[in-house]
Length: 394
Image (cartoon, rainbow, N blue to C red; front, side, top):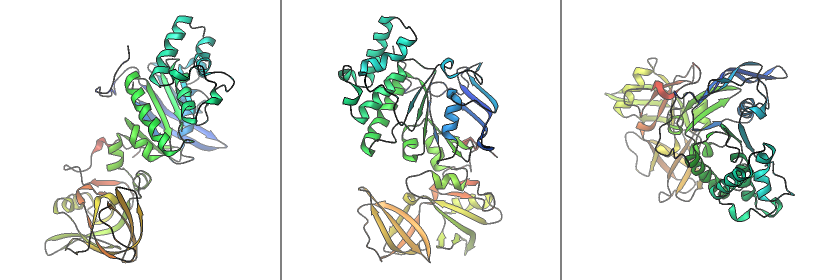
């Protein structure tokens, strides 16, 4: 019987958790992974997100045993597996290019690892039928791999990995070679399978949309280091550095260097784009967190509004490009010569060259120290910035 974890909270104290402790790996004298401390909770789907060269695939290879750590330790539950070879780690892997046998049919591919392990025949059939139904490929069992579509082949690759009942299921950019619609479909299937099986999964990707869509938690890496760990909405709404703020999100965040000012009892932030009137509560919170009054304010494009009518809190701008995304429009604006991005509903249409007035939803902004570029204040937190954001480094 499957374990359904849809309504189960992640247990950070489980003795089955997987841990990397001060793990390091160098190639040609350069750190690919540097002092990596990461805990993967039992039964969670953890996504490791980062750009090319961030160390995310190296971290996966260290967990699998394909690479051995130069320093540090790796634990699967209470067991130290740092020096253990891949075949003894009870893991399964799926990569961007599947490792299927094209001359064999689907059934033979799924059963291959179980036959090598000399699993009893009746157990082989039971497990094979179970994963085939789970992945909706039971009607293809007698087809050769070269007779399947790309999406069907990835389903077979996942079935081949899951049939082994691994302690840890590792996926390295498994959908990257597929078209956008199929990627979304298989992401949804992966989440469903994870919820039904409760297998601990680590999914590596550079795709922010993919990470935000499927993860229980996201671990963001850059230049071999872990930068932030937390639930997807924490990563998105409370990025702990300006780099994370810029990297995570479907549209580039507006990061405006500015200064907090008061004028006639009203609070403002003066930026190159103009002087924005700030909500009083947010102004007070940002002022308390940034006593020098110098700031970098982060404004997501979707937390803005455009209007033909100016207000005391708005900044004037000119439309110089727009991209239609169906239900919304991304506008590239020039405000006093500074670039600014706004995403608004599609029924708010403006032409290139139109003058518009930009207002900001201040309750959704993030504020950074201009010297350290680290999070000082998140406006959506009424009590100030949350320590629970889980910054990975001080």
